[in-house]
Length: 300
Image (cartoon, rainbow, N blue to C red; front, side, top):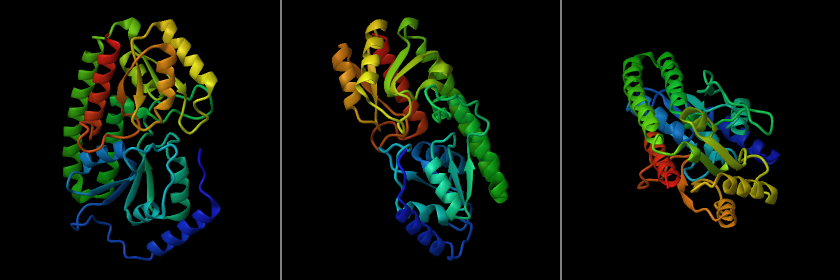
C-alpha cells in the first residue's frame, strides 16, 4: 500500500491545525443538518440517499480512481477537517487516510461496516473490504448510517428515518432483481474472472465462483505467474467471457483474454460509481449495469 511521505504529513498537520481554528457551525450550507464527508463515491451515493436535502455530502476519492491506493491532497484533509463527521467503509479500505485523520483532526470517523460478516483475505492477513458488492450488506450500512445521523442531528431524525426506509425498499427490490437475473446464466458458467478478486461478497450472495489475477489492488499484482494461473483456469472451465474493472489497468485482463482466446465481455464497476452519462451514476444503477454485463457475457 502506498505511503504518504513524512514531509507531506507535516504539511497536512499544519493545514488542518489552521483549519480547526475556524468557527465550526455544525450545519450544512443552508444552516441545517450536517456537513458530511465520506471516502469514496459509492458510499457518498448511499449517504446522499439517506441525508437527502437535510445535510450536505461530499466524498474524497475521485470517480475513476480506486480507494485502495489513492494518495490524498491537502484539500482532502481540509474538507474532512471542516466536516461534522467522516464516514468510511472500514475493513481496511481507507486505513491510510483514516489513521492520518484520526491523528490530525477532531472529526469523528465512523465506520459503516461494523455489522458486516466480513470475509478474510485468502492470500494475506486482513479482511476483504468490498462488502458493498452484496446488496444485503449495503442495507446494513444504511441502518448504521441512519442511526448515527439521527443521534447526531435529532432535529432531522424524521427525514433520515423516512429516507432510509425508502432507500431500503429500493435496495430490497434490487436484491430480488439480481437473484432473478442470475438464474438465466447456466450454473456451470457462473464464474467471474476479473483483475482484482473483488467480487467474493457478490459471489457468495448470488451463487458465483470468483477468480482474480490478484487479491487486492494494494498488494503485489499482475505478475506473469498470476496471469498464467488465470489463463489456465479460464481454459479449464471453458468460460465464455472475462471482465475488466473501470478503475483498474485493463492491460492485465487483455493479456488473459489474448492468451486464453476468451473475449472481454465488458467493464464492471467495483470501487466507484460511473461518471455522469455512464448510466451507472448511482450504487443501484452500477449494480444493475454489473449484473447485466455478467448475464450478457456468461449466458453465451
